[in-house]
Image (cartoon, rainbow, N blue to C red; front, side, top):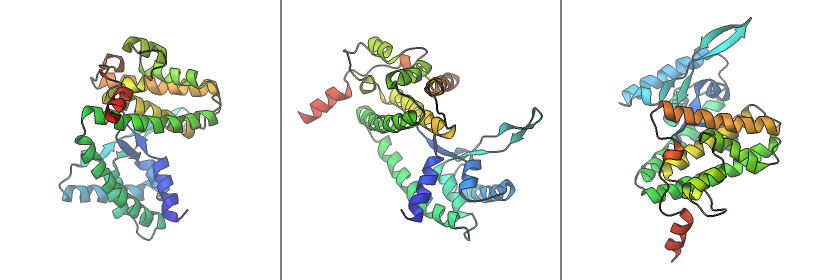
Length: 269
């Protein structure tokens, strides 16, 4: 694998996905990957990136979101640590304004330039999709996400995968298991619940899936009990966020008239 390939893996490993399926990076994590030892110097690069954003007539707030948090400094004391949630475009601007003598910066410039363009095309295409096309797209992502999540769960010690996934559903759906969701939707025995969700409900589940995978890896969880609790906690926090934003609870979202399996058969015929 070449250096760009290795760098791509690093950037993808620290990528986060919010409840609306938007990707973002934390500035503190990006700082480490770009080999900046001091936050003071890296924050200077961020400020230059913000200025470049303004000069391009782009709203800074859309790409550099304050994410300050309280951190422990010992003796039960805490202090506020500055951080940002960065869009891919923000990361691109940071790379463009970083120290070009650093190999990490040079590789980041290439990576984010390529990926930012890909993302722009992807978002444009997605906005033009019909609801059913969006469902197919989101379902494809959840399949990939569940595959990766299962690998992470296995490494965390999970053996009963049905139980593990039910913990995630129970957190997101206010105590409902996969069987409960299927019954509420009026599905036949063993019919896939994800194939019977609209794009918004699928997006909420995709967020649950990706964030659980990252949390299992990040916190190096190694017991089935803790993995189950992690999945439940992630689902609960996503549910809480939806409520705080005034969104519709997943169980209240309408079930599409046709499952994706039915639509696939129709397309084949």
